[in-house]
Length: 262
Length: 282
View 1 (tube, rainbow over the protein chains, first blue to last red):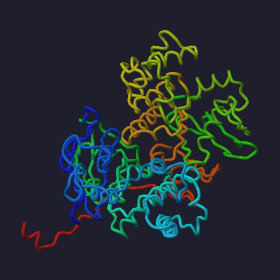
View 2 (view 1 turned 90 degrees about the vertical axis):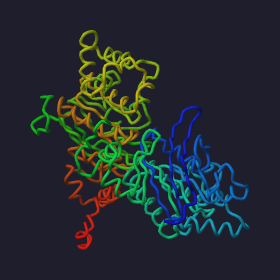
View 3 (view 1 turned 135 degrees about the vertical axis):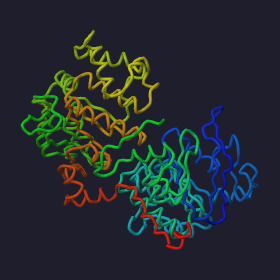
View 4 (view 1 turned 60 degrees about the vertical axis):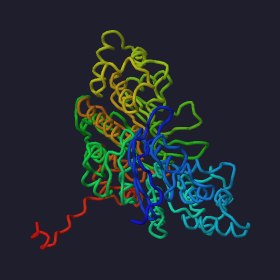
């Protein structure tokens, strides 16, 4: 593991007076892949928002290169913003419906028009939407794309500022399974080729198994188990992790039997 | 007809029979199914990705496309009664007494201003069931979906997604329908809750001989519960057969692609063999 530069320390998060995430510690460095797994109400998406600096802690800290997010200088804040990029469920939330795909991606780029256009073409090719095989795509608007294409554009847009970490909140849940498989391949390739770190928030254990070296299991706002993803999935210890694991249907398997929580 | 038959029995007449069902929209064929039979106690799953036409077909089978710009041809019978040519009154009767639709978002299909008890009593009353018989049926239905009677006092917003879905199934059970048609009944639910709802459907098949037509995008999930699977793509049936056949012997390239795309948790890594020295040192 490389030196961690995004660290949550005793992080608690609240909406109003209701604390929804309690006392989470985590540390991320370049190339790290972390799954945050849980069901609705577990606090996993709230935790993602805090890592993205969208929600201030009610307790503890999130630090970037050793400085709590709230105390970053202007320059440090700019660097943090570029380093950590979000990808949401189907790209709709991060894409402006009025802007063309090309303009959306170019928004975060610097330089002259020609340089930016070239970079947009490169980024689209990186996510499997090479303009040579998808002519005219950059001129279209988000609603003219399929869900899978929108998600690729969402990833291209996130990659435009050359981040070190992508925080992905259920990036494939809204997609058809064959499309999901291709997005997973894309993320796996980006991780392998550029050492991009990934935080993947999902309810889907099979997806973290594909992409994440380590995982946290969240239940009711708390981390109930953490460790190597392989260990969590093959030898779950906490009753909730076991329950979650048992609920996953397998092709041609029996109906999952889910024990009530003790 | 023996409504308690737990396993499909070919000597039992079909509950649902589809022949050359085609849905047209603006003169264009959007979805078609050459044939389908569902017998008491059977679960037939229709799987496909978005745009495959699976939900459209299910709606056509329930006569829910009448009054829309869609045109339906072919024939669908439920319990021997024709669905496609039935008038609105007859359709209501078929839908209330022979077949019920369970939808993806359970809360969305329940009137939010009514307590669940009022809601289920009204539905029963509309189908001529009231008084002591209604009470008895409601109690039996709640027990078979494992919901406490206390839930009748709550509003739809006061129950969880899984409870709402089990309640929607309980309404169908109380109506004593023979077929439950379910459109992505677990897609909006957490994975642990999804397993509970599938378990409920399975129990109803075994205990009450209910037939289930299950429309879903989730091949892994349906493979745990269905007897037969119909695979749809771009409005056409591309594959069909019992679960074993579809999973292991299918020659349809699309079915193979779908199976390969299902995310799976890899089995445990083999235990690393411990070096002998370390073993000795212990």
